[in-house]
Figure 1 (cartoon, one colour):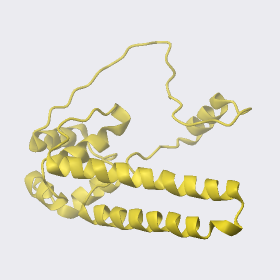
Figure 2: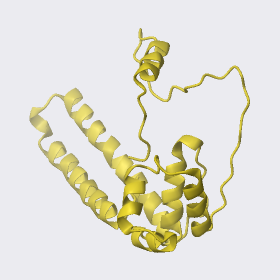
Figure 3: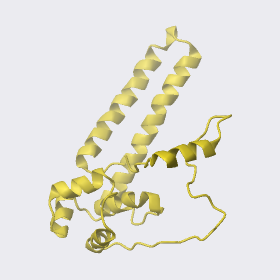
Figure 4: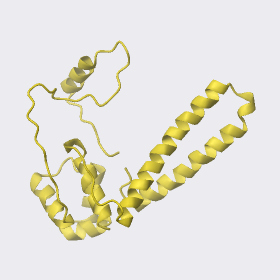
Amino acid sequence: MIKNEKQYGVTKSNLKKFQDAIKVITKSSSSKNPLLLKLQIDSIQSQIDIFEEEIKMYEGLKKGEITKVSRDFEHLSCGIIESRIAKGYNQKQLAELLKTSEQQVQKYESENYSNISLKRLQEIVVVLEVEVGATFKFDKKSPLIKSDFLVPLGVNPDLIRNKIRSRGTTVKMCT
């Protein structure tokens, strides 16, 4: 996720480098194994697709073309950052509205708002003038942790979940 103009510039630069890499690989393809060539191009194209999607989202938010996003609780921090961008605020402007330092907002965002209080979250939502909704689903049969990752054949996903729980591992979002 692109969070600011600096990251936007870096992402656009990286996109160009990856696009150029595909051109170089394609030109020098005569001596390579066709399967290896396809794998290389596909992996680079996959990253290009990610860059393009991030750029499209950031530009859409900045231009006001995207006015609503739906995020689950795990990705609440993305929604906050997207709201700031859509409102046209940079981190410094949000800091001024919150009567805090720009560095504090940078820290909030670098940590994906993982260490803020509910009260502070409410203040941010009020300052950004965004509508936030919540849905609580009470299904006793659903697992405590959803599996949002692919598990190789023959590996038990419950073993992975239990290992994560036992370590107290947290997953960073919006990286």
